Figure: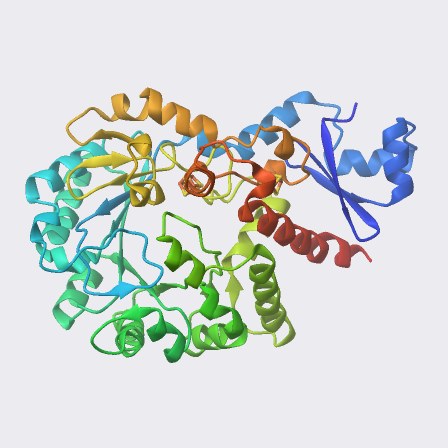
Length: 445
Ligand code: SF4
Ligand code: SF4
């Protein structure tokens, strides 16, 4: 018998997927045969090969378990806000940055210690601590304390520990670089594209572009010199200003030897209305930009991975989910990540703490881990991120997709959103269509 399935028409073909994420491309007559349940032997064989039907139910159960493997792992990503202060002012900043002089908005040593103790109560074997801000380098002494204390604690616990820093590079210097490399702290910065675009997005007393470029090159040279298999990561934020730079953003990343770029759309996370109007765009405008960027990479055979494209392709091709927290069901909130504010308050995810709403505040670092992640609010947020609502339940991309309670709340005032009115759904739908076409249909024709 055929498993529960959903259909999406793409050109003159049909993409059929089942609950466990198995999929097949069909033509119209094959689809009609399935609907009438008059499946000839050759089609039956195709459906068996693709695991759309199976003689063995435990195979389907195994597929479901594999695809949802993340449910059995525990919270692995822990975002620590070392300070609310920032040395810059970006047009798209939604982290609630505060003036550099407000030192009372830094995490203190006592809270830092309790935060690390709390994090290590997570049942996950993999622990990633990510420093965010404000600008984390403004609280350098506490950053160093956490790095050292986390390693010391882990020496007796033995988890797979990774520590990362997200920085605008404005306060980087040789001493800090040496420390970060020596302690194996991964470094990620922001690079929005060519100089005029990057600097336009920031209010700073000098060109931040020059600083970012200098330190990307410097770190990467040092990794090579010290025979370390690592590369600096960069994140691009796509604003309205970026839309005409599809080619230049790719060129900028390629020029620096970065072979990965993630062209993510902007979420309306509580921007002042005037800022949102200035920097936002329609889903159609974003999709036009994204398609142009992908075309440019493909036509010119540029050695560049667009991460969003890659994640979708991995979801469609593999049985195991790549575990991208923003696009899975339930999403990464609570069960994949937690965010710790400078004062020890805990939020369901980093974007949630940016909203600064009590709804997403689930506890503090003085409590027990199990008590925080199982509280009523935490369970409600996790529950609201399951894409079981009517619209998603009719969509062929449901097994690979996800909804975001934080975006829903920010855009529509409710953690359960009207999916068809979200930019997110329109954009994902269009991206899925392109990747399905290029991965399965072009291939077949
Ligand atoms: S969010 Fe949109 S694309 Fe994703 S499963 Fe729901 S309806 Fe489909
Ligand atoms: S709530 Fe939204 S932003 Fe937060 S982890 Fe889930 S999908 Fe991501």
